[in-house]
Length: 479
Image (cartoon, rainbow, N blue to C red; front, side, top):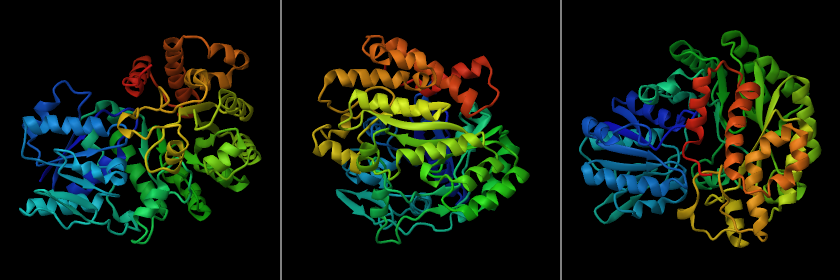
C-alpha cells in the first residue's frame, strides 16, 4: 500500500506526528512518501508519479479549509485514492468527514489505526470496523470509537525521519533535531486540548502521561546523531519531567552516553533546587517556561495555571542560578485583556530577565475551555472556518477598545526585543500607537532569529542559513 503524506509546508520543526505514522506503516510493510505542497515546484507531478493509494493529511484548526480544498483539487486530477484526515482538527471536529472528498478520518493517536486501515485496504476490504477510524461507505459513515492508548510507548517504532528528510534537505542538515521523551500532560490549562483528549479516552483507560524509558531516548538520539549529525537537541514534550526518578536517571546517563546540549519545556511550579540542578547536570542550556500573563487573576482563573507570580519568580531565580537560559512563553490579546495588562506581562518578563520573551496572539481554538469562554462572552463569533492559522499576525477577538487591539497586535511584534532593552519599554506605549507594522514585522523576524540562535539554541549558523531559517519560519505569516 502506497501512502503519501501531504503537508502544506514545514518550518523549522520536523513533523514528528507524520514521522511516527510513517515508521509504523513501513514496519508493517507499506510504502510511504511525503510532499510539501507549498515548497516544491510541481507537487502534482509527485502524486502522478507515486500513484498513492492513500493520501493522508495532518490537519490543525485554521488549516482545515486549505486541506479540504487541496484534497478536492487532487481528487479532480487523480481520483481513485482514499483520503485520510488526521490530527487535532478531525479529532475534535469529526464532522469534517461530511465534506466532499473526505473519505476517512482518524480520531486520536493513529499509529495502530493507520496500519489497520492500510492492511485492510491492501486486502481489498473497506476498513469499516477499525478503531479510531471514521470512514464513508456510500452515503453511510462508519464511526468507530478510539482504541485504548498504548501505555508502553517504547513499543512504538522510532520516528521515520527519512520520509521528510529525503524531500527536505534543509531539515535533514539542520544541526537542531527534535524529539519526544513522553506523551501527554497532567495539567488543565484552559487554552489547551489535553482535557478534551482525556474526555475522548475516558472510556478507554484515560489519557495518562506516558514516558519513554531513558534507554529509548538515548538510543533514538544517538541513532539520529550518527545518521544525520546533531549539535543540539530540542525535547518537544509538553512538560519534560514530571517524575524526578526519571529525571535523576536521565541526568546520570544522557551527558555520558550522548553528550549533547538540549532544551526542554518546564513548568515553574515544578522547578525546585534539585530539578534545576538535575537539568543542568543533564546538559540543559535553556528551557521554555510558560508565564502567559502577569495578571494573577488572568493566569490562575482564566488560563487555569495554578501558580502565583512568586512561584514564577522563584523558578526563574533557580534556573538563572544554574546558568540555564529562559525562553518565556506568553499570550497577549486574551479575552478581556487590556493593553495595560499586556504591558504588565512585558514588564514581568523583563524582571525575570528572560533571554527570549516570546508572545503569541491568543487564538480561540475549538473545543478548548478558553475558546468556549471567548465565544460565550462575545469576544469571538465562533466561526472557526475563518480563524487565522497563524498566531503571529492578528487577533481573532473583538476588543471593547478597538485601539487596544491595534496596539496589542503591534506590541506582539516588539514584545521580545522590548523585554531586553529598557529604552524600548520606556517608549512602548507611544511606539505601539504608530502605524509602522511592516517595520515592526521586520524587527520581529530579525530579533526572533538572532535571539533564538544566540541565547536559546546556541548552534553554529552561517548568514545564508540564518536568512533561510527566518524565511521558512515566517514565509506565510501576514503583516
